[in-house]
Each structure stands twice: as C-alpha cells, then as structure tokens.
Image (cartoon, rainbow, N blue to C red; front, side):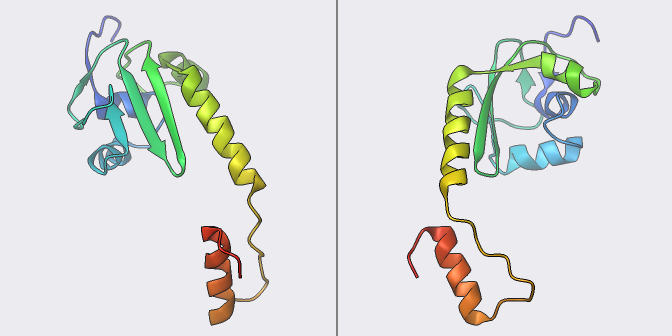
Length: 130
C-alpha cells in the first residue's frame, strides 16, 4: 500500500472520497463523467501520480492533480491529501456558483403545481420569461 506506482481509476476515486462506492465510481466513468488527462478513461485504467483527472458532478466540473495513490478508503481530511484541485478549476467553480446564485429562485409551493405551474417552473429553469 505504501509504494503504489499505479492504481485503478475506480479504486482511487473511491479512496479519495469522490464516490461513496466503487460501483458508483464505475458508473460515473462509464457515463463519461470522468476523464483522465482530457482523454477517455475506463474503470480499470491505471492512474499515476501527476495525472489530471476531471470529475463532472451536476453542473460542476472539478479538475484535480493526483498527489498520492492509496488503495484504502481514508478519512475525509486524509483523503483530501491525495489530490490538489487546479486553480483554473477553483475559479470556474466559483464563477458557476455565483451564476447559479444570481438566477431567480423557483417558487416552492405547498401543494403540487398544476400543469401551468409546471410549465412556468420549467421556463424559469431554462431562463425564459413567462
């Protein structure tokens, strides 16, 4: 475990706590939400120290550089030492958070919306005026 030079992508994503289980990591890789050095990746692809991994979750894309390889799941503070997020990724994530915060909030109703209410909510999400 100490001197690992390569490690499966799904195992590292699980150990670094990006996904709760290895199966979820495998599913994300197969759905194209993970890329390695801006290329295609498979669950059994080997990661090395220094590789750049892009992880897409929801509207956010996080790009990290691998600093350490561990095949065991660690506590959250120790897992954060396995990678470093790139400055470009931090800036783009902060910009996206500001854009999302500036969007109008969808009105939450106490009852189930009718057909018109559903259409209005979808139009607000898409940024259309009603």
